[in-house]
Length: 149
Image (cartoon, rainbow, N blue to C red; front, side):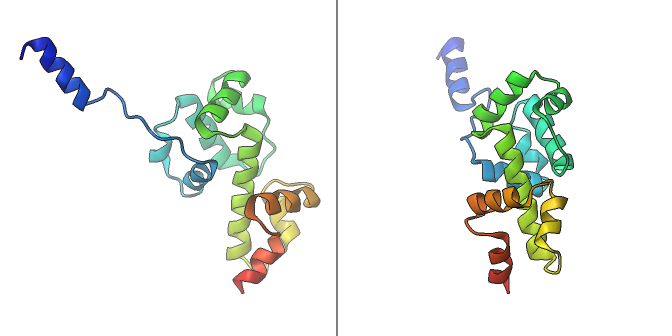
């Protein structure tokens, strides 16, 4: 075997980069909740910065422009990164992060009122919170709490 054939054989068994199967948005939400920074290392740097910013400030009002500035990318590129790598828009992803935190609060702190939970995770409109919660979780926030008892 000559040197060229040997190099090709080595490259075939050791690809220069890992190819990762696309993950669901729920997977990435869970990574943020569990502070799994290792999983984020496989994403482009701009998207990783954006996700880490969301993890820390999910309950605040975050615009695409503000997030793009924090991620050091343009707004259009940020939107592309979310769609291409997470399969969801930035706003819908942020919504899922907020609902996941609301679920956690409802289960861990039963005496907390549902309206208080909605406000604490960044929803200013309670009816919008309930609608989003029902769409993502499959039932109303109060039903989740009652099912836990």
